[in-house]
Length: 242
Length: 234
Image 1 (tube, rainbow over the protein chains, first blue to last red):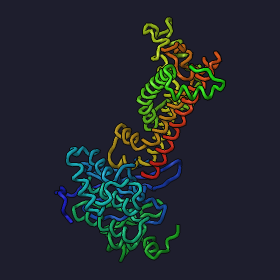
Image 2: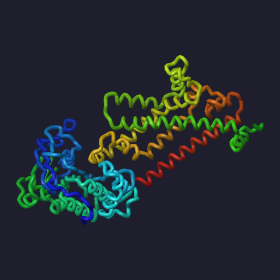
Image 3: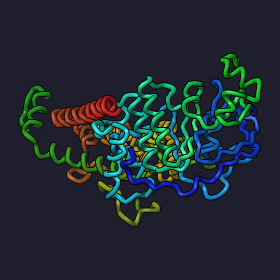
Image 4: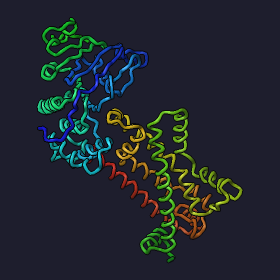
């Protein structure tokens, strides 16, 4: 499905280092200071039960949130990034206009916006819906539109915050395929999920959070076969209580 | 004007017969109020959006003042503009008092707080929803402004219509700064006051019907637009 001209990153994006980065909100510690490096062209899945701090970690990494302590920095030039949210945030415009908007924000010349946007719509199976207001699309269609928008940004690092949590199995598969396509083209994917099966299908690396603390960061193989932490074993067995 | 026992019938005859006096008064009213709404909207939309997006010292005070001024008594607005524009006032040299321009200024003063305060509310709400996505796309606050104003367009249209409703229906401010001069600054509301006190009920009633019709039309328009937008854009 590589029918789109797309600049392949020649070298993978610089590593992202979280250095004792923590989040405190109104005296409550939401994320204990954690040190973590996300690098390479990998699919990194951030796992953990609800309230573990997955979304917070993602927002810190993407720069939507500043750490209360420690710091978050790219080891090099900050790469092109995009984020797909659990509930897609789409503008009150047509599907096509949502995409041309993202291109306009990135200073893509006016003439090439519509052709590019149409290609992205077609790529994500949304071509017949281009004139439909984005916000009346179904949940699955909205998430695919959000992915198409991210696709147009040609991110070197893509963040996804539980992108399939509210979707039916078919839409979930579409999202997972898109994630793999992004990855195949050299994008580092950082995605949160609480779905173990999904993590097994997608992950190259797993980061496990529990109660706002980093429990384990290892390759998927190690994580699923020989976890280092007893918390991870409990999580894998579905026994983690929060 | 035909004499009739029933002022209501005469009023209808005036409207249907497109009576010259009536038409000129209605035209001036529309001209003044539409100009005022246009100017107020041009100033208040960016102001409201800026108040929604930026946090700065004094922001709360401005919001409280705007909210309070939403209920500014028209006569007070009129008096203020009168003092500013009168010969001895700071803007006296422009000779604007008792002209339609003065009426426009007074109405702008009345409706600017309404449009700005309601715009702030709408944009703030939308910003809460869009913030992370727009930030993720790399937009600065300044670049968020047009996006948020455009995406709030249907709500804002209702806000602007509310401003127009207030401008066209108020009497105190335009009476003071316009002076209700026949053929120059006489608008619907001031004419109604005058004709009623003179006892010329048909003209007053005719103007009243036009005014009421206009306001109803505007509200119907706002309602239909809001409903359509909700259905179409979700």
